[in-house]
Length: 449
Ligand SMILES: *Cc1c(COP(=O)(O)O)cnc(C)c1O
Image (cartoon, rainbow, N blue to C red; front, side, top):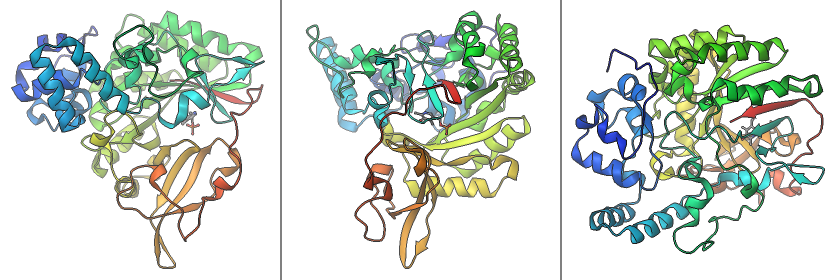
């Protein structure tokens, strides 16, 4: 690994990656796979990730390499072969068509996020906001357009390939629509990346208004970010990093709880000195850093990785928050794990850390009715079951009420589960589903994601 962290952010995409100093270290067949697969799934990395996070002696199995570089088996073998042929033949029109077909099969909007959670105020749809759980709204700033590097598992892949239009396919104007109807979601700004991509002056325009006395019901402000792992210089050496720290201090001084929701997928992201320095600086402003990540095959399907992540994180002042199950989207089959395996990884890691790390909850599925925790795999009166409960629910009264699904060693998502004990429905299916809760002046978290 390199010894000098670059001072200036230098991104790479499919065309420019060939100029990266490390490109020659990637064997030819893997390089071709990067090219083929990144025609479907978005690819972006940066020099810091290449220099400091990837162990080039361990590619292709190095987890950060897997996390950044598209890999052949992220596509079905037939799809890969077809694309490979089309790229070789140079038939651009067929290529575009095929890319569209493959993307259309990758669920772009998991768990109805865009269609069901868009609130209305005085009968007007509020663009850029999602309100699924009563206590929290998600806000997608139109100015945060990308990330410092893309994770190959990310559920936001559709917007990184250009949002709606890229999924509408080639051909005549207005020829197609989104693979799933998203009539209201369509009206939101479709650029939603990492808020920390924004320059401080820009971020300030979003945050300062939240500090006004009329918005005193907004108690907590969270900023979801991958910058802590992929570009920690955002908080240390960038020209406006100091201004950013002052901004965080002002938010805290205004009486808000400011939380950076750090998307740390692997402990390698916390090992570099500069990553640790970034964490210390953020915490020094009075902000809190919480850590969350999905559990992913090829990346962190190992209790030791989670143990190190939580232990090192806590030592540096961060708070372990969620372990998620990978959503039904993108290159899911590459990353997915049976729920029972995800649970074993969680439990093994959790059992091996101090109570200070046990603030973490998981594995949790962000499913349509809510966040569903896999709480165990007990055998009750001779039947092996999944013990489940909602950590969050559209209907708040469902939270933390245990329920049970038939054990299924192959199940990878909530919609594959059926009730245990011969019951016909889960307890929450007996009642009508609730609409988005009303957006009124109640205590509220705002989450910039
Ligand atoms: C996870 C999530 C939240 C926040 O839930 P917390 O449990 O408070 O972290 C809010 N909205 C949506 C849609 C979510 O998926």
